[in-house]
Image: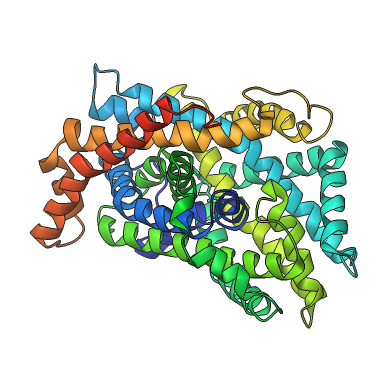
Length: 452
Ligand code: TRP
């Protein structure tokens, strides 16, 4: 299909906003604190930041280059840039990753909707950490409501994706992201001023190097990929909507910086309060949902704050779910030559079915386990630590070795003048440093038992 017919972002600001909207979501606010909490806090954070810089930004740039150069979806772009090869399998893996991610991501997004209502009904008021934890467990085990909310999430996501890129995705992100940041900072302030908060800060910022294991390294890499939305072709798809005059280098840096700041702030929001209120850092997927209501209770205006905050988490999740669904829809639409409506419906319904199993794995399917993980746990683990990590590896290998230095540089230079030293260093990282680093983690992970 021709490039003219494709939707595109309205310019530099539009892309940054949409890419930040994709990157910032439950990965930062919900997943980062829970994974960091289970994997050693400060030591985890340090490795995480290291991976964002040496792997996150190069992969992000590669994805933008692949997408913009081909003007095609996650799978189509490999077919276009590498015809008669098997590189399209990377795209296929991305589509599979999108299915798995959206299946469990919509479960958690659904929880945020329930928490909006609970905040509205003032039902956190006067409850201890233990009681809030019971409430969370009872709700997630209850099946009917979590599934209902999950379907609502999928329906709203489908509606926005159906309306198209610039009208839906861009408009929504532009308003929501800055507002979210303001609220997060306010909650951080309250969390930090609770008595006993310093222990939480220490946990997050004082690395205990004895806690670094291979598992911690793998989890940090998986979290970095998940949080930046890389390794799956989401940014290839968005890259295909980027105009030629948009600078790819600056955009990648800004997106990665914004995403990392929000993740760290989410940690600052959660851990001081968690330690002050007497919770455990290894609280798992419920961590944020149990800790935040505890903070709101001790905030002036906490009632209104609680409602507003869950609304914003939900909206941040939504700007991410649309970017995941868009990957699948763009592929269905362009490869099977069906309408956007049909593509959206097929993708939404099939992902929702998989998603219901993830939701049920907190209740009736709690005891269905594979590698000692529930269906939800497995989807969460496999997507970030296997599919995205492997996807990121293949994407940098593709860019560095197949597409090659000159085409990469051509594409980057279209939009901005970059110092040749900077450009050569980035190419070097894409070609050597990132693949070796990801490869080393992957090989290590393969040989180490008890990783799951
Ligand atoms: N990055 C998002 C978050 O942190 C989740 C997400 C959206 C994503 N699109 C993605 C993850 C594509 C991997 C790939 O919440």
